[in-house]
Amino acid sequence: MEDDLEAIRRRRMAELQQQQASSSQGDMQAAYQQEQALADREAQVQAMLRQIMTPEARERLTRLKMSRKEMAEQLESQLVSLAQSGRLQSKIDDEKLKALLMQMQPKKRQTKITRV
Image (tube, rainbow, N blue to C red; front, side, top):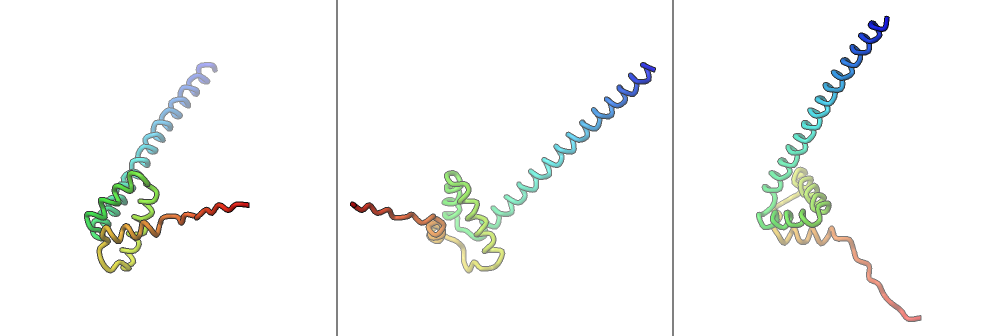
């Protein structure tokens, strides 16, 4: 009887180990697929930006991405959506990009000190 219990335990342990191995392999494959999808999307965005921006504007956007990543990503998504909707009439040059960035800047409140 003890041998039967031990055999059942060993069989169950082997099944659990096999499930865990296949599960971790599936997780790794899913993570790889997700990473590949993100890389594909980024490549599509960069290709679209090359079409709608001048080299100088892309360079400015790259520098912005190094210092203010969130703002650069927001600007990229806005530019791509404008291009996809057909609302861009011409390429975005450096001056237009500067104007867009100025519009995106949060308005600074002027502080005024008054004497009482």
